[in-house]
Length: 279
Image (tube, rainbow, N blue to C red; front, top):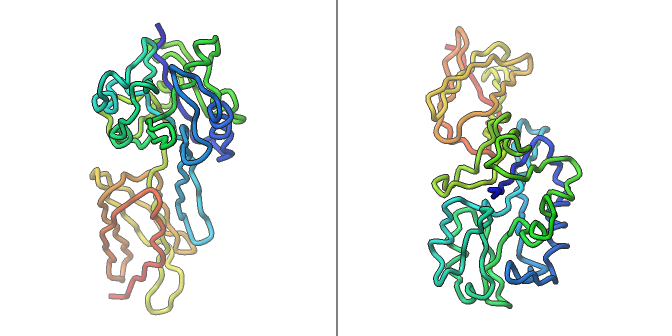
């Protein structure tokens, strides 16, 4: 029996939202009980797209698109929170919310650490992505979101088969799961998850001119030390830095070193102008 999972090559995602539109087209107004009842037109995003901005400079904003369906966890937290077997895992690994047994169980929404479960107030039931299990049962090889992706972002298949396309992709790219609650053993993987990009521009405090050839050192939360030299415009960049507390130090002979603490996140990376003063 297959153990279904999904993977995303984020370098290919252009933010077209076709996957989300396809999900709506498949599930809004369509009842696929006992797998799932109709998805509401508004408020539910069984595959949502998180847009994460990085300011590399005042004139260069980079946007990463991160699609997020249900992670179909091996050890789902939602299933532990469900009463009367309202959530179960199929033999193929797909986690299903029973649309009859789950009625009234609003606690299931908060049980998901990834925010992938939604509350249908009209039907009084929790709902989420099913990997289009009804289509797979009907002979489809992939869910609608995967079928409609125009740029080949998404991989779907059997994680238990090392020769499947998804298994080869995860192994080749060293794809990661979302770093939220990995003990649930999510089965949705990402290559190219956004990581902090630290950038800034060094200036001479007295003249306000660009400071070239300044030695810049960044010590990350993991203790890893990265080095750069400011260019002719005083600019410097560090890619794929660990999140969390870090220290930045700018040094140049004849000038006082500038040292500052940073708290790095994916979306706050432009440090602005950093002045250095003569000794």
